[in-house]
Length: 397
Image (tube, rainbow, N blue to C red):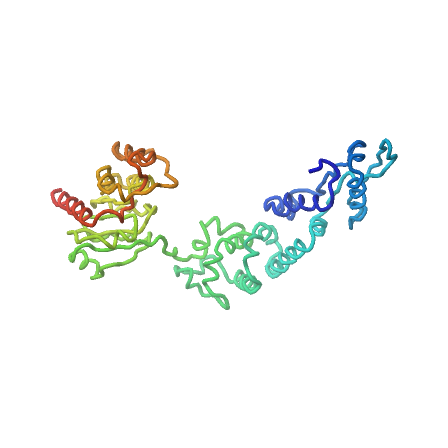
């Protein structure tokens, strides 16, 4: 590749890469916080370089003579041995956003028109939205014009406290569906912040500002493991509860068995005065619930570095959590069913016993030829024996 005589196509592609495709820089140009002009050096040749490739030299000069906006090209007169005195293009200067769009061509022109079309219905509500809209261009581009008009219809309707403890999906809106609100919360919150002096952020988010009840999240499966506990749970043998409900609703059993994966929870045997919470994966935050301090809590997850990390996280919430079937003996008994672990976790600083920390390192180094044993791969009779032993130990407490 030549290191002199840059042609218009090369410069335009560089502008596209450095200015248009660079989201942060483009936003700054559009907001006026990164000043114009944009200088582009065209690298005129030395005399020897020009003589080595006269065709390129003449093509380089001719190409910039044809540049559609000649006022943007700075020329300099140079004297070359054997060629004499020549005017050569030295620098291109893009003086404005409009000039940048024009230089980049039809695709950029079309994209900028799309931005303007999407922004206008919203700017008609409040011109002060311009800065926020520029920052949210990526989100705006995802919306159809139908959605843009829905957004313009929605924003004036949203007022602080209007939710009156309803869920977000139950907001009393006119001509707008509440699923649209749920799907576009971050964009709506940003625009409302601009319209209401950052009140939404000050309240802690859109739902809080509207006065809505928090939408339940992080659902987990709950299964009573004996008839008595099932009776205390209104006769239900399987329910789903949200994080918020688990935090505030004490489950009606002396022992709580926490299972990492969903399918493993379905295979649990009957256990006296025990209830299972399963399918949460990495979600151990609910274990900080105060009512768990008075329960016996067992934790059973995959034997891999991530499973042990989740166990450690659980113990940070409730230090009395007991690990179940997450030991070296269980691994060795089923080692032929193990696999490698592609992305091991980092060893937690706290929450694991010395034996568990040792097992963690053995898994990470594949000491036993495997790095992962899924809990679903344990033999069913082994699972039932271990759970029965845990239950008997619980009865002796």
